Length: 376
Image 1 (cartoon, rainbow, N blue to C red):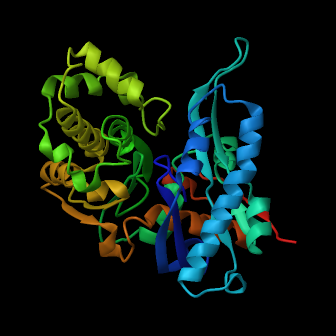
Image 2 (spheres, rainbow, N blue to C red; image 1 turned 90 degrees about the vertical axis):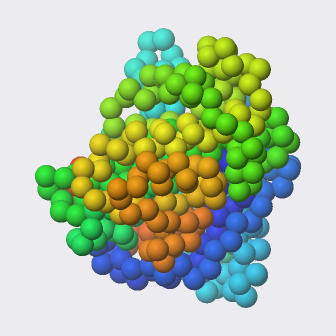
C-alpha cells in the first residue's frame, strides 16, 4: 500500500485463513519501505494532474510496479522469507488521480474516475508471486466511486455483536467505517471525511522542507486560528451527502492559500497555519462521524494521523463520551491497518466466491474486486 503522502510502501505480511465472515487474519510482520527522491519526483509530475501526459502515465505504470516489487523483496529479505513462502501479493498501487465526478468532455456525463499505477503483471514477474491489483475499478463499475474500500474488510475482520464500533483511518485522506452492534435498522456506513494528513504534509514540504510534521512538533508550536478554521470548513464538499470521496485534487496547497486569502490570513505564521490545519482535520472527522455516535461507541483510530498529538488530543476531547483507542487494541498496528484490508480483498478475490451483504448497505460487488496476475 502506497498512499497519497508517498512516504513509502507499507508492506504487511499476513497469515489469512477462511473466507467471507469466516475470515481470520494474523499480522506477522510490517514495515514501511521508504520511497526515494527519484520516485517521489517522478510521481509528482503526474500526481493529481488531470491533463497528465499519456507517455508519462504509461511509463510510470511499469516503473512503479518494478519499484514496488523491489521493495517487497527487500521486506522479505529483512524478515528472512523467500518468495516461495508467499501465496499472494495484494498490491493497491500508487493513486495518481481520483475524481468522484469527472466530466472532461462537454457532451459527456460526469462519472467517477480513479487511477492507480503499478502494473500487476510486472509485480508478478519481478517477484515470482501471484499478484492481485487494480481493486478500485470494480467498485466504480458497481456504482461506487472507487473509495473507500475499507468497509468490506472492516466488516469481515472487526464486526463485534458486543459493541458499536467506529474505525477511523487518518491517512492522506481520512475515512471511517461505522460497524453497528446490530445490523438491519442500523446499516453499515463508510465514507471519506475530508483531509487527514494531506494538507499538513503539503504545507510542511513547501514551508519547512520536511515530508511531514513528525509527532506534531510544528503544529504544537502554533495556535489554531478560528477565522481561518471557519473558512476552511466552508466548502461544498462538506455539504455532500454520505458516502462521499475526495483526494488531494481538492485538498492541496491551492485550497489552503485560497482559504487564507478569503479569511484575510495570508500572513499568518506558518506554525499557526499548521495548528489550524491539524484542528481542521480533527473537526472534519468529528463532524462527519458525529451523527453515528448516538449511543456509546468504541472508536479505533489508525493511519499516520495517530502520531500527531494535536489531532488526537482534539479528537479525544470531542469524543470524551465514547471509548477511544488505536487499532493496536484490536491487535493491528495502526500503520498497517489499510494494508491488511487489501490483503483481505485479495483473499476474497482469489477464493472466487465472494458474497455481497446488501442488508448492510455496502456498495461492494458480488463479484470480486481486483485483477489476478500470474508470474511466468
